[in-house]
Image (cartoon, rainbow, N blue to C red; front, top):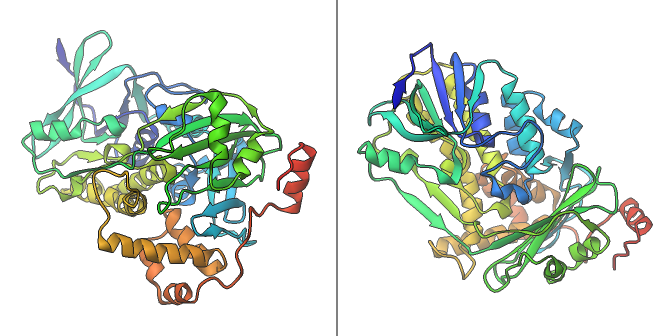
Length: 468
């Protein structure tokens, strides 16, 4: 049976209680009377694994570009994350970072940061912040079946609850934040909206992750990152210091160099990275979890902003628009920046053509992250969906030159970090001073190995860890 609910004031419907869904609710709460989040599963009140988020088992650093957007939407959230045990890692001051071009210096002046925490903690803190607002409610154990309305305007959703009953929920605004399982392309087609461009670019990488008890305190401990080299494909990995004095470790590789879920082989796999620093550290750490493997590392995007027809009252956000290879750590930050763009546009109200303008605004941070992720992945010989063009190879050559220069040039390191943390457009890398610096090359000689501080070496020695 289908029952229609009466309209009561202006109402926004958010499909999905993911991080993107929570941020969408935060973005619109001040511009409508009520917000209802439709979620298929339970949403835990404390930091726990949430059904429907298998990627939570893997590292989830929150870049400063995304952290600033979240704090703009939900003031005080980053402070609450830090109070709950998350670590703020200055970049590149507190990073032991091996790029394809060499070891980055740990500059004493930090210009950016990332928030290092488990995905469960990040989700929990944001969820608590959002749900403090009485205007926002959750309808759990409900699945959206269809959009209501037509190709000109969406007026709500039709959903089914676990008891089998169906309901029509009015919405002046519907935001799809349902992630990779989005059904918006199908729903648009049912409304007669065609011509949607979709891209799926897959390097074939496999991700394996595990959490360890760190042998040293993780407060102010650096993030360790050994990056892959697309010119010589092989395994790579990272250690992220998260709450509870734990290390969240992820290792990944393309076909031919993939990790397995077997705990006894995880250490050997990490030992096969370009440098043994991560394996040396883990040899003195206590495993706390099994190894979790993910094969879903493709870049997948729908170009909604290019459609000739877009219905008023509908916006898509987060992975429902674009999902990225997780090794680049852009997903949460892009969702946050997209939500902030929606909020800023809503400051003038639900004006005509708002949804189209909002969808275009959502695409802007996606464009930056997409160029960074796909620009790297197309270089792997195993990648499907797109092959590198001459322009791609030329751009990669220039970025590689910049990366080599950044190993010994603070200004270039800062410009690159501006882009990688989604705080600036890649066009900053074409500034005259950056072009000149790239032509000159690094001003300081390269490091020959990981640059741990004397204090960090002392902590490791106390824990019995002896690095070469």
